[in-house]
Length: 174
Image (tube, rainbow, N blue to C red; front, side, top):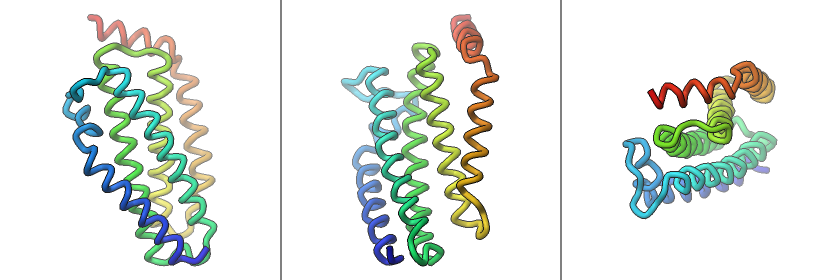
């Protein structure tokens, strides 16, 4: 793909995301302030945030991969577009994670909530690595992502999730 086509497609997606963030700002970020939107239950609020995030992150990863394999991907216009897309994705990850954190604060930790939170943090790490790769010329984002995900999986594995869940819920109860 030509750099102009890539940056235009990504810019259009970014414009849609910005409009979505502006229109839905209260609903997306009310969990940051510990407030649940009216007519919403905690589980629905957290679940909706997670599934919105998953769809957007998958689309954005495809766009980033498409841009990565395009001609002239190091052009300034493409780099600016990719940076904007990555930052907007990180904002949506933060929104979804804040919803899950509020849900956990209210109802405690379960295996599904722990794994969902871990997935969101791992996804944030992937997008941070991709963001940094836009600024570091000779970085290997693929290798960095594989190393980070291996470390994240090992950390989750050795963290003894059931013991962690029990400890968090006991501390919450006390």
